[in-house]
Image (cartoon, rainbow, N blue to C red; front, side, top):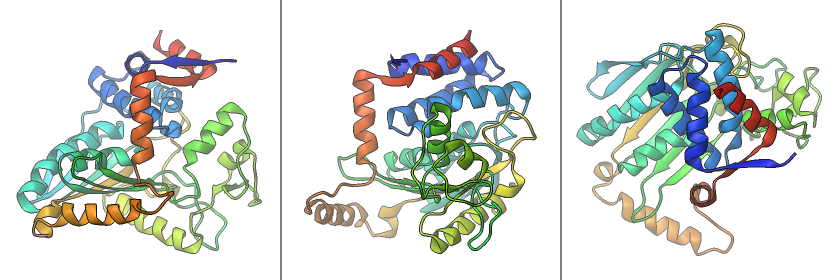
Length: 334
């Protein structure tokens, strides 16, 4: 079966229609669609259009409140607590970015805790927005259980992404975005949807055995990057994203991939810093000096460069979806 090619605006309109047809407000649908389309354009398909059927089903079942409007509470001079109200994370994260952009430029550093939230999507997106506003961004998010504590066999933590972004002079920002599992769980989900195998070393089946079967991996556990060190980083992120935001830990949260069950109520934590203020105006100059040394070596690139190149290509030529996925989303939209 051939793929279906869509322009970014066509995909965005399709996603908006699919979400609103299943109970999402127009305002929320637009913000969710913008994040999904950017992820798809950036080549991050596990956070792109493949999520739409899951999102629509969860809104329809009431697991996600598609009408929710996030609420922002001042909890300090440069600290904000945002209640996502069991709705999508994207409106809450956009609200956090809006507040932090103003606060960090006034105070030098600001932070926002987002609770009662949902799937964070591509973790690099909120920090990229901060970087484009001239700030350094650091982001933590937790997700439903997928990784066992090191030495254990039962999943307690999510794949828990972290992201970092920094502005550059006359260039797209540096963006570092990574799941703390060997690979983002969304990649395994896409493989399971398409009936493709996965490489060994990504995950274990429900019995704790290495597997290349994507469906068995989805039912089993993910392996952390860096073995024991990665497991410690996952614990750190779980504390930032769940404990710090008053949200559920990975083992307490319901799946992002199922319509049944209660709201996941996961969390995100976002920090913004005015690096020029901390560095006495030297930050950008020092960044470019370091990056020049990196790029002087053959075979190197700056993190984020690939996604921006893919995004530019997608803006020109559109993106391709598997025909079955396009048909499923189109059915949801009509």
